[in-house]
Length: 179
Image 1 (cartoon, helix red, strand yellow):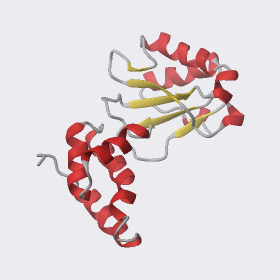
Image 2 (cartoon, rainbow, N blue to C red; image 1 turned 90 degrees about the vertical axis):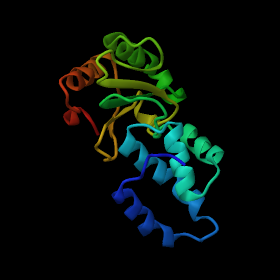
Image 3 (tube, helix red, strand yellow; image 1 turned 60 degrees about the vertical axis):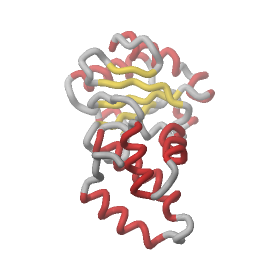
């Protein structure tokens, strides 16, 4: 048993959602939304959070871990205040996604295709697909503690990504540049 506890708000949401699904499927159906809400509460989904969700939903920890590591919206490591995800799937790659990703990494001093700036403010992640293939390169930004849908940025180039990074370094999401 873990010492962590889901917030009252998450427990309330579980109670609201539970009756909407067949009893034999509800635990697995709620796994992803509960993991997402837990990631918002705790800042990431580490092994202790996986055990917490598994206990709460009465699922095997291996199932919960599989869900947590499959979806890019669930962070299993430490994330900065801003999470900038850049798509490098084929459509975005052909339009210059690796140039955009490289520019971000250079500006922020990040060596790998997933990492956080030295000041802990910005996490950059290479992701497989953000479902906007006709508008690539595409990125999305989420801000810690704000569970709104992340803001999309399309048709990125080095100039646009520089403006986005500048805004993030100032401590704000550049909504004027997003979709």
